[in-house]
Image (cartoon, rainbow, N blue to C red; front, side, top):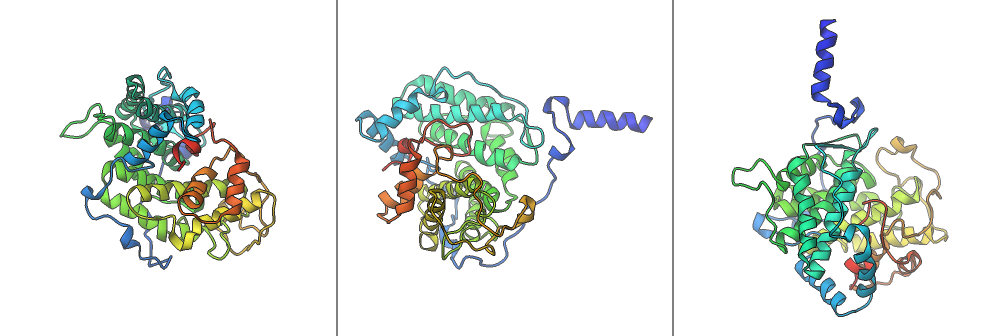
Length: 403
């Protein structure tokens, strides 16, 4: 009986009721699986950094020049920025009066989830950061930085079997807000001191960046890779940046060359469902966008392999037929009832619910002059990328990605 009481007391200490987690939600402690050899045929060393001073700031999804382009075109009433801004500025998460829903000491995504407060606040922090830059209205500066500081000084743990998605999706939006406010808004984190130990950067390092280092498979793994690139930029973490960059190119299960068949652009998720297929293209594109901000071209890898993937997915999801190779499948497909003999029609179709097409279109068709008929049709069919119900994608493409 004494052993039972002691065990119960210990469980209460380790797993407090307020976190509402269960055994399966507690993360195991294990390290990343190392990459072995050259998988892609690309010399990835030319994409790496040597010193903290090599980083460009702001330099995640947007550089200073990108932010200026957005602001100038909105002020001058130039399309598509002006119309996009009209809707963006009216969105709930863009309001300086947005009511913070957190913070919480522990957030979880898994069999038990309580992370939606963080998800909502992360989006509000990011959208208010953009609103501040465009309008220079200090109320937006206050709202964005208040959210960043609140979570940055109160969050103590991120748990759950799907915590890497929480970290890689909601966390990526969060650090993009911080990057703008720090380097453009002169924000100093609450709790920042030379001794370290508290503040946004410490939470980002211990709870976000280090929990992303275990890269999963296929789309799941790319979520971690693209987020680590973002975290590394904010932290000036050369080692993390190089690790993530090498994974983007060389990872045998989640990297660009592991996911898309060079000959056709078929995704390793194509037999599973189209939602994961399309979202993974977006996640790879956001990672490439970080590389672009840092002065390297990931969009051109594999002779525009990401564009080929976009063309393949767009063609099929616009109700045309494509060639399907059942042997081109993902690592650990058995986890999701694979591999698959035929291409999946689950979640088939292009819509603004998965707003990925603007970024690919502007990067390849507008900026590079590439011919991409299916991607162009998908961007047109999708329509305006506006308010979304999750942080899987930033959305608002005609405001933030347009050229």
